[in-house]
Image (cartoon, rainbow, N blue to C red; front, side):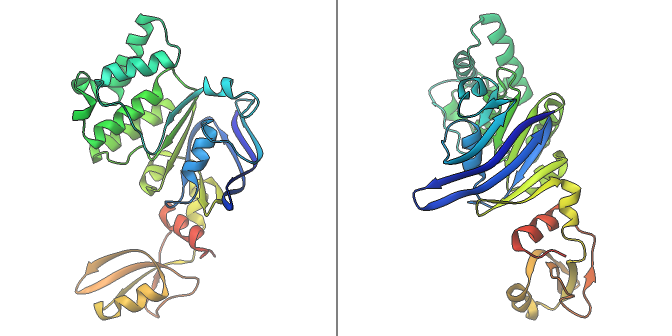
Length: 291
């Protein structure tokens, strides 16, 4: 089922064009939105969450027009912004009850059940009665995820949700959204490739306000076929490689440095072509180095 359709979307901040003719479609399941910082991801998420207006284009969410039927769209949404600010005088449980009330969950028993459920899902039950001012950054992020889940939203928009989470909580989060995505739509906006790689079958890449890719994550990896190489060079040649090629990664090995680089042609005679990953495809797309 097509749950989200964006057609010709444009957003300007005075003379700066933040989003340029965005066209995207999304179905039920997990959808990854990848891009470097400043690419326009958060602007797009704010528009989809009805927070920001836009100049041109059309957005339809579950057959509701975002502009004409914004109130109906908001009833379907759960949203975690990139910068999640919360009143620190509340306890975690108090804050979630407050958010649930704002989402029109007025039945006290139902509200209690939902709050306790999301606290358990994000592993915050042991700290639920602690003041938020005493929460760590990761705990605040988990609280933000919890409030986005209240009300059983059909579309969940998560902007950099794993920022500040430790490895075990990141795994817990991935398992949670995988379970939730069976019967709803989840947009995972991030610059962390591993979050997309482990969770999403479909993704889009946005850079400088433009969509450069949309499709299966396997197809994104294929964008880097025949342009990913590994080469081992002495440390004395480090600056040369860094200057001339797009470096994806590097590691020490037997006194040399082994680079994984993007290049249409073999960067050195001894360079070895390697099988591309989603990260390679992402880097190839945003740097225009594709076969």
